[in-house]
Length: 399
Image (cartoon, rainbow, N blue to C red; front, side, top):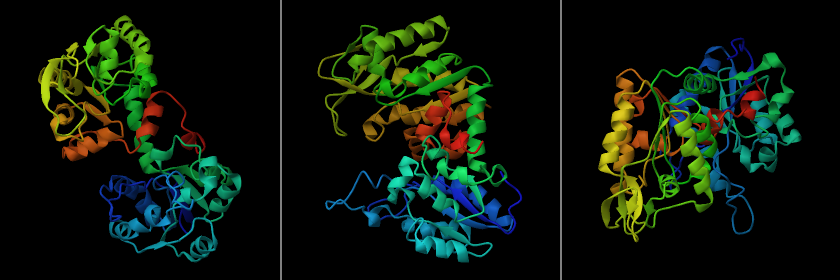
């Protein structure tokens, strides 16, 4: 990160896309906490900070009259908390590149912090609009991108804005560097055995990641709804479980590739099944290859939990992306939470463990084990794409 910032105004793209409850209170401030090292470093160097971020998808959830629900998606909801955690009174501009933003940025004193309104209130944000980006750049002397969670988006505030700063006046932030270094440990130099745990509903969401991981992992543990597309590919009986029929042949190819590469691709031996998709459904444990009609697999079963834990705990590198079951329903959360325990145990045994964003982060937090793993990524989609080997536009634009 840049270290010659004294007397400058620094525009930092952060990822403050935090969850809010119905009262607009922050329910998880992980992304804010992870941005603090960069913010505080800039302030300690004797600079002023101008923060910009998106929050939610306001242009996809318009009011009935077609207007943006600015009350719901405003970043003003996080100002008080931001003031508390930074230790500086955070000022707020009710626009992003309007008159108020320019006035407050111009008058911002060294040591001060200004938060701009939601970048996605501007249509030009998602299209990478040059004019919008140019106005953002005029707010400051220097640009730092520390929003890994948005690094896979070629938006105005993550990518286009960099065109208006000289090479010596733009850089990645400390969080961004940590994210990249952690991913590289898995991609480039994993200690072995290396185990990848992939969950989630659909194979189609993880095709490229699975294909990539089969090139260099030792064990690939499959869970979640995607399990049953693989089971169907092996001619198993899946009952009413989720199966992507259009991806059965692809699942067969991935199974064959795993065998060819000597990767141990594990599917759960048994599944906790339900008679319907409901938190209060009747449950029964069935062999995953023989799920009766009328039943659907919603979590890995007790034999699978024990088998997966044994593999995870004996690993030296672990990547986890995606829940092993419908963990939002308490009845079907055991597989995911027991996996979290196993990952924590592996970490205590000396393994490097990377939680790859999304629901896995929520699971590790709910399990109270966030401080018991090596690294938790703040970017679900961004981490997936980086691990797939894709070049992220938000990183490329600065690097």
